[in-house]
Length: 513
Image 1: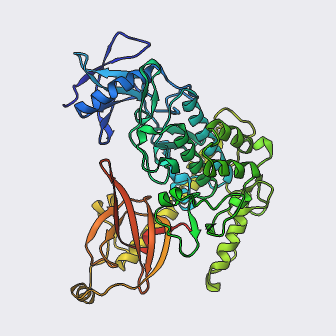
Image 2 (image 1 turned 180 degrees about the vertical axis):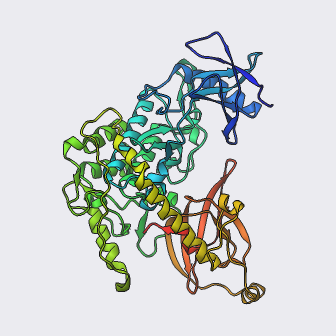
Image 3 (image 1 turned 90 degrees about the vertical axis):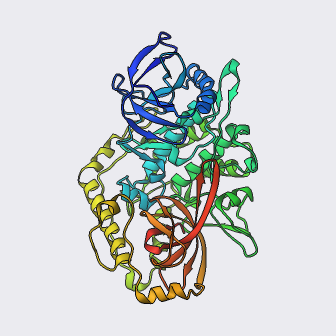
């Protein structure tokens, strides 16, 4: 059923309905579309598409209006939650959807972008370690307010969180998908969660049966990744004879190798700096991943607050690289990591580098959401420089695949980079294929630019699908004589998880070591 040109809104503040115009559609998904409302700036309207979804969500939205969590913020640019404000109905009173605060997407990015250094560089986010501590604190602050009201997120993951880059504030999206405490009306369950953030005890269960413990596991995973440059806490190197599988398989097998007690069967990723975390962080992570009695969001909030507050002196700027590195008094793990990476390079590629000063500093004071107003300086000369570097990187990838720096067409700019035409010799290889010789890698990674997943290691092979930039993948092997990786991509088709395996050029993949 198509939405009408105007809808009627009501909430607990004004039970008498108010007519508003339905504006342009600005986003949408499988369940509903998001529209602007010209009569109500700062709000948007979600209209469910199917009658079955309207029947499912109508009572849940009524309960959400009456059981709203306490939030900080509340201006037109920042809201911690996209929580319902009003119920939307037809003139006859039929449920259509709900209005909610408009999250500032132009001034925010996916929290996924803050996890890994290369993503931060491309996006223009600050590199100083204190910013990641602030983002972690503000996420825990938001989750704690949701739990205090009795609600559970269940599908808590970085892509459902928007990071407001100016001051590291967090907004959580898709609130109608939460598990909601409706008081006398009972609990309204969630219906979705995402692999790599599912608690081990939830293996084989449905999201409907999960509660706060699932949120606390996912929260600890995100905080660990924020503090450890994107490394997943169950991303481990296994002894011979142990099967790795996916990250979720590692979670279900309890292969957590970053604890205070080490294991001979599984060891941390070489790029991890967890050994330099303060002891209270390490104890909280051990409790989160080795116990069913996990630290609460309030525990994380209070612990992180002391380190995120620059006046506490708990986070120390590194003498060697104070604009990027921070440590906790155990030595600078980031300097050690840079030394490790430098020593692994061939001697012809080693060069002395000096840190470029970045005029970004944490504030002297602290507020409930720990704003970092000075981040706005990045939007000027440094943002321009980072954009130029990102453009040079993308052009270099284009040159590598095409053999010449031909300008992209309009359609290529909006989708993916061009690939070389197969030569006659390549066509003969297609006619008489030989099994490629591969070296096993079995590490996680992500796609750095839109890429074609191909049925074989070469541009002459058929395209299985196009993998969007930023997608996390499993990198299984590398072609012995060539520049192609065999990767695995897990996606979702409706309610079913699907896995595709194929080849992607090495310049389009970054590997987490």
